[in-house]
Length: 542
Ligand code: F6P
Image (cartoon, rainbow, N blue to C red):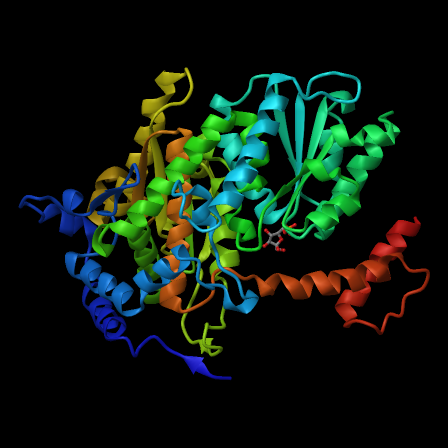
């Protein structure tokens, strides 16, 4: 096994030495001694694509950022970025381009422009017919329930966006997302929908995914059981796939098939027909605005100098904590209920893309790659796991996301929400010294002092959106997409494949057969797996 290190890059070694010099320095001291203009906050605040990020509460100095930007230079981040935009085969293990950016380009000479425009027009026509009530179910009733059946990239992006943009959604159409092969997921939705008013969108790039096909078949059976004639199913099922032949084989009418393409990765696909549920929910104009926002960020990523480039800086700061501080995870804390599903969307984007050990040259890394991505909206997280962030021995870097103006009418809540977001970053950074803790404990309770000390120096970035609009949301998503590419370029891995999900799928089929077969050979698997299978077989007999 060949292991490769990044130490050969001069900036990597320089960063290693720099880390040793500043690792014990304190953010609170840096802020206190920062008396000259421009202030630390001003120097470390960067705008791009309509978003603003304050990086100043990170454990970085001007020198750190200079070295990190040199690392991006030496690692060829700009070259990788340009290759992606140009449609080169940046996913060599699947021999594919990764052209999600072409889906939001307005240029007539963008790759695949004609194909993209034609499919978008078809989507818009269909979405508007559903929204206006011109498209009806088999009894002539308009569609009031849209059920998106898909998983991973065919679920998480649309689900996150439909939830985020509920304030601009069609008031009479509810959208449901069914992903899990656990029948409980579909059953929960079946209890709430009426077949005469329901449209199912079966979304699967491959159209072979176990979970999606199982749910699609069960939903189709349900329609028939509920009285929908077989020949009327075309009014209730549309499909989205890069494998249209398979969609037709499933029984969806050819004209109800929406295409995506192999050059769009699943977790980068919400901009394609995979976003049909989004378009039906919010309309074609808002979908266009979402694309325009992503395009704003694409332009910023291509044009801004690396040192003032949001995706580059997010990527580099992530690497600083992952590879130099040794942080195992990073937290995304959107102070926005509308962004409830952003953390789970980012989990796939970050970890399915960069959770790898094989480099592009076939050697293995001897350095850490993707951090564990996790998160929960604020302020809820504060009452669950923030205790650990403040006083646990582990440092978890955080992306706080603040939406400066509310998208709802309960405006009096908003200062409380924002205050919590900003105060958390301040408290994590400042901490509380022993001396300060002694004052809080008072003379009678000296034993409380260790419990009232906060180590502080806990890093965070605060990313701000003026308002949550389709456009700002598009920009936000594209920011994280490009951040992932920046990190992949530095780690020298391919962020666009996902071989790591295969083995479990293959063994899953074997185990499924063992669970349902008339007989089972307990020596077929290791003793643990065999015992689990035996237990489930016995439970099924009871
Ligand atoms: O199993 C992982 C994965 O292949 C993801 O990459 C993808 O987003 C998801 O499954 C769904 O795949 P499909 O769209 O082909 O059903």
